[in-house]
Amino acid sequence: MADKLDLIPITEWGFFTLPRPMVIAGPCSAESEAQVMETAKGLASFGIHMFRAGIWKPRTHPGCFEGIGMPGLKWLQKVKETYGMFVCTEVANRDHVQACLDHGLDMLWIGARTTANPFLMQEIADALRGTDIPVLVKNPVSPDLELWIGALERLNRAGVRKLGVIHRGFSAFQSTTYRNDPGWRIAIELRTRFPELPFFADPSHMGGDRKYLLELSQRAMDLGLEGLMIESHCNPSQALSDAKQQITPEELRAMLCEQIVVRDADSQSADYRDNIDQLRARIDVIDENLLSILQSRMSVSEKIGAYKKDHNIAILQMGRWDALLDDMVRKGEREGLDERFLRSLFSVIHEESVRIQNVVLWEKEK
Image (tube, rainbow, N blue to C red; front, side):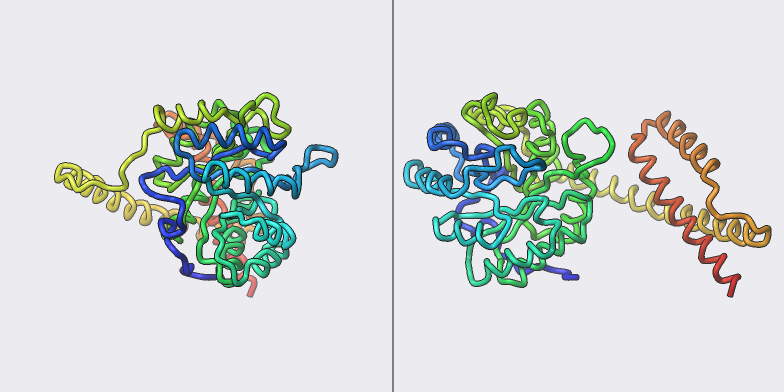
């Protein structure tokens, strides 16, 4: 596993500039030349430089609109010629890559379903070898951080140095507010491990509904991500794919120019520095105390494991665990803590406790 990727900074790619957010916008799908050109005109009118449109659409069920295919690449060429915009689309195999290179596209992105397939990722990486085109990689459909990193490594080893990611959320079995679970913790972990990696959020696919675009875009900015990929259509209600999550160019202009608050990465204010340093020092002390408490808890778990072994008792006691978890969630909520956070935290603690008890059991068996 790579500790570092060999990257060219995004500000040297030729079309993204500070300040944030860097924006990629355009329709989910290129449907007709008229639709593409009208949408591009609206976006260009307020300074959007990177135009996106899906040419090949991976759909769950056959018979849905699966993209216009090769004719759409000519429409993207016309967008470049007419409005001076840069253009990009999604690729899922070597043929897509070659077609985009032949038509002079400026950037490519790789979708969530393709990211999850190492064979396809290697095929795309091989097709890109020796080229200089930037590539953005969406997270895989499942919250598998190593699978996401592996896709990046394949491209980087093939010489793709203009490389970034798009966070579009993760598929979830349970019902959620959004179309895809934001799973910000995964994004934060990737950001922590590869701080040099350009990072975009895709609030359109994350929310699945235009009413969530602002709140998800704001969250991305609050986390310090570089940019946004947002779906915009000249007539969203008539879109052939993902109509519910697209907005008009004018609505996008209003959101970007009048509603989103972009926060600074840092401040040299003496007042800010003094107070933030004091608060961080308090956090450090609390974290050290947490480590001590966790060590004490696992020490008790080890003794419980030994006691269960001596009395021939199974390690997992699910009835007790379910009741304990519900009790901890109720108590935590009274303290103002989020239920999902509490369930996630205590599930990890319980998993480690079970692991320790298993170790005790097998050591005694030996």
